[in-house]
Image 1 (cartoon, rainbow, N blue to C red):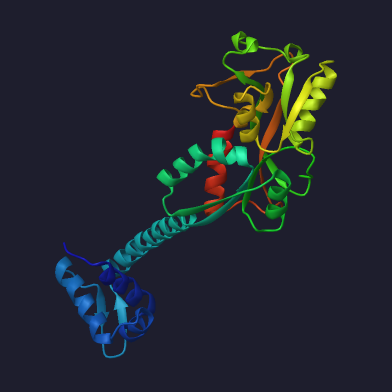
Image 2 (cartoon, rainbow, N blue to C red):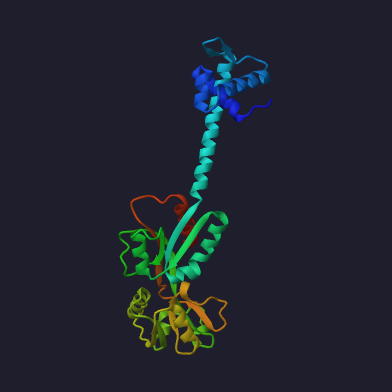
Length: 296
């Protein structure tokens, strides 16, 4: 049998209204087109679906039963199509992410690659900035999500999801005596020349706290605001450094060595933040799920 979706819609509309004219008005069709559709259905089935006289159109028993069953199928089809439309809309749109530099260079790239592969219609826009600025732009509504490390900035007004711990590491030239230690301790840093992060950074405050608690004295020789500048000076032989792992050189570096520091294993917490008060929806929720899963 050869039925079109439109013909089935005509069947249910005529049965519901009991009139070709009102069914035509409901469907935005002409009365003659409705009559033609009904005749085609009846010819295909070999059975009358409606009893007609000059004033009334009444569904036969077969017509009533068929219209009821077809009506349920059409409702199911509408639900399926609506769900498909909703899913498509959830996967389309722009998502603005504000992130600290170390997150942009190490944490976000694999997340962006997964989002691009799974959700190609999501337009990711990433802005790099300091941690305190990340919190401010998210709270101000200028970014949908923020990725930053916990620190002196106030995160209380925001909803935060943990992304894991970024462990502090020793960074030194490959020829340095500490490079031979697989698990150097904080006490191994005692008396060393150190290229430090700027005293105004949240990371520096954490590093100074551990050194103080362990009774370790170092000789600061330089202070830099960017981890890249710290690494450049360490590579030039100015001293050693302590950096969070996301900011430290990778194993592919041919000049510098990175070793996690132990006793204690100190770290900074990375978090994903968004404005509070309402659940994440649409493409923002999809991107946040990828970030939370990969960052954990």
